[in-house]
Length: 199
Image (cartoon, rainbow, N blue to C red; front, side):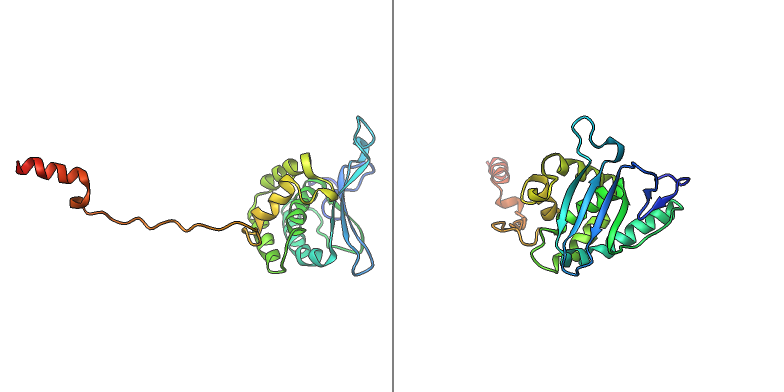
């Protein structure tokens, strides 16, 4: 995000052919939200498609995470002296780096089994640095970056990592055994020393 350039939406360059993300929010209140990576001029070259849908998110889940993303993005845009925005019905352009971060949040949230997990996921996502979110995006998109990949690899792992383990089936947390203090006279080595000293 460069301070000098004009932006639209959440920090997206206003020029034609820019590499951005597009968040499509349908007018129907129950319609899913699509997060799409738009490659701009790079699309249709060297095997790169013009765009790829990264996640199709249930509207109820979107409603629970959108404010967290909006506040975080606007905080960063203000710090960069860029225009802030809000989510609107229709197409919402997003800066490519912020879009990658949004995908990480959406990928973790899409797996949530209960509404109570979503605030935890949002809090843990906020605790990550932008660079960490970018890295997680790169790792995930390399093997599981399409809507149908939600149950694979890093994509599934994001839910487990950011939901604090809630809902992981078959995982029993073992409590560490308390260390019991052993008196010196109960340890064999000290018994041998005492016997030698007495003999």
